[in-house]
Length: 340
Ligand code: DAH
Image (cartoon, rainbow, N blue to C red; front, side, top):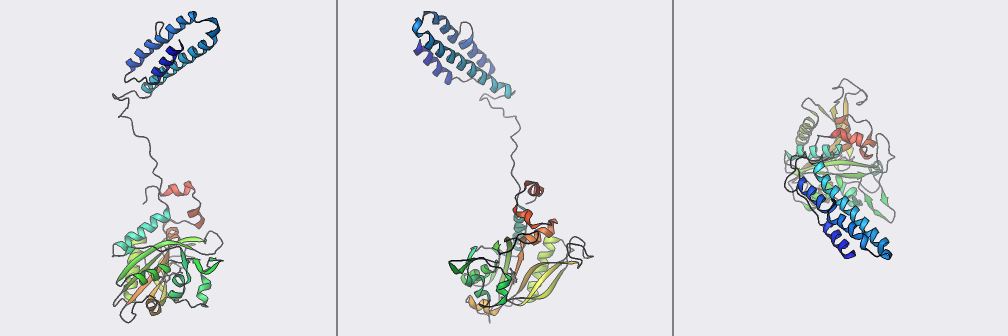
């Protein structure tokens, strides 16, 4: 009797049904009055008294198992009204896939890459952990230059030569060291500064650096390139304005403003009622920086620019608080569904 119970249990494990009729057939085969399981209950009378308890328990288990199996097989057909021979309903709509959304900073970074890609700029990357040479010295920051103080740098206590890069300008140096001109590249990446986190500042943010080195490159090329970029990024009606500024690695240096997208130049909170918003620093690459990288500054000239991705994204999507970029709040992120 015990062997027979085991045998039926194994059989049940392997049961399959392709149609509803087959399930019914199996139900009759095992569970009807004359079914294989029920018949064992009849035989139970012949089991010696001392074994009744044990065998009775096994029999009940078998019956429950048979019932469960038949129920499971039935369910398969209840759920799928229309089924194929394999039990799959190929007419059911597919399960909803939630592909997520691209982060607004990635959307804007990709857009910047695309805009410069159209005028021949390729993309490169550099390390986030840098040394003094690439982040400062080769960029013409002398050791005691006050411009270093403007970039609140994270240094590593064990080795003052190692730091988290404060700007993507370090990749300019790495590229000029390893690549012969002409160079026409952009370098997007993450940068770090020791700033308290607020609506307008964060210790981690993103920049895109641009570098163009060739013979006879002039300020006119820089201005034209930036104007093209501004109009592609913010719209054809956008105006640009270049103001003189200072960076150790460019001479002359400038900062570029775009006409305020929000008020169109008439004055609002975003542009602090000036009609203009600053978006990047730029200039002609200083001959010292070229020479530091082994490029002959008598033959080659070039320009560079660096922009903050957060700043541009905030302007483009009218985002008022920088912290939103880092909080991973889906109520914020979901608003960028469909953008790419
Ligand atoms: N690296 C500068 C900063 O983070 C921005 C910058 C200014 C980059 C002028 C440039 C440039 O390439 O030419 O403040």
